[in-house]
Each structure stands twice: as C-alpha cells, then as structure tokens.
Amino acid sequence: MTAPALVPSTSARPTPPRVSATPVPDRAPTVIPVSAFLALPEEMRFGRIRVPVEADRALPRLCGGEFTGGGVRAASAAVMSVYGLAGDPPGSIPHGVLYQTIRTYRGNGSTTFMRHLRTELASCQSFTHEGVPYRIRTATLAGVGDEALTIDVSQPQTDLPGNPVGGTQTNRAVVIRIGDTVTVLWDAEYERSSSKPEVVADFARRAVDAIHAWRR
Image (cartoon, rainbow, N blue to C red; front, side, top):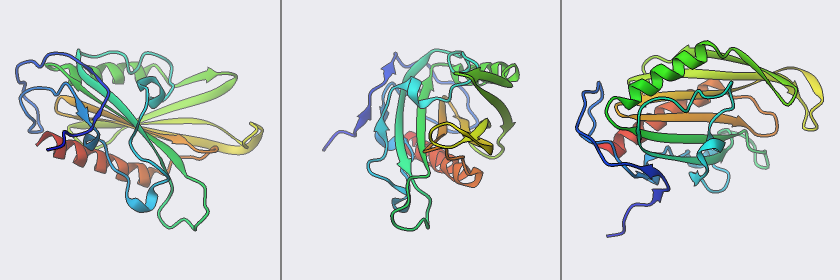
C-alpha cells in the first residue's frame, strides 16, 4: 500500500485527549497529509493544486504577531492553489491565489490561539506597508467549524503598475477551528483582484469537510 502524501511540517509528541465540540481522535496529529487540504473543483483549477509553500507566505500581512501566539503546535503545513471562477470563458486569467495553512495543537492550544488572534485583531484596524494604507475588518463567521472568523484586508485599488484607479481592493482570510486543528484560508490577489465572499465561503465549507474526512 502506498503511504499518503505528506506536506512538510513541524511536529511534537502527541498529548492526552481533550474535550472538543467536534469529535476528533484523542491526539493531535504530528504530520499533515495533502488530503487534509481542500481540493478545488476541476473547473476552478489553474495548473497544480495544493502546492507546498512556506508558512510565512501563506498568511496575510497584518499589523504583526497575530498568527504567532497560542499554544504548542503539534504540526503545521501550508499549500497554495491558483484558481479561476466557474463559468469564466476560455482564455481568462486566474481570479485569485488561495493559500491554506493547517495547524494542529497540543492540549487546548487551538482555543488559546483563537483567543490570542481575536485579542490582537481588536487592536489592528489599519496599518501602512511600503506607503500603501491598509484597513482591517473582522467578523464572526457562524456555522463553520467550532468557531471561525473572517478578516478583510482592504487597500486602494490600483492598476498593475501601481497607479490609483479609484475604488477599493479587498481580500479575505478565514480562520477556522475544528477541535484541536486550526486552518487559515487566505484568498490573495491575482493581478489586483478582490475576493468574492461567496466563493471564499464555499472554500471554507470545503476546507472543514476535508479536515473532518482526514480526522475520521
């Protein structure tokens, strides 16, 4: 039997079980297989999907430190998929780049991480990077995993060379906790594109389903 493909991760020894609203095995996994990540529908794919990437590249840039706190991780891995929108005509360029990070935590580390993230985001409403002003908006996302929130990162809309063209570009991240596991979806731009909330919501549902299937 061929062993399942794995995404490189950091790992630690598993720990005793903890109570969770979502039924999961008693110990946090120390390796994360590729199958744990959501797979884009065929009609949305541009080239390879679930390509392993460095963790720092897979998370949105915010005020700093939002994703570093929390409990002790058992494993962490990240992948990237370039995607288009279903129904786009042939020859269309991709719509966005979807990054997904999965982390497993020892003990109550996943809830500690979510608490830390919410605290940090409460004081991160705007920042400037390389002269570009960014605004941050967060909201609770009900009915997804054990707890979830959205993070919208907005900046002035520009053309490819960086000239202002009016309007706002907004890209969305979703952070979801499922038991001892946390996944972060970051819908990054492709040539100044904005996120479509309904598309990201579908990604979130698919991500939760994939993690549930992995942890059965």
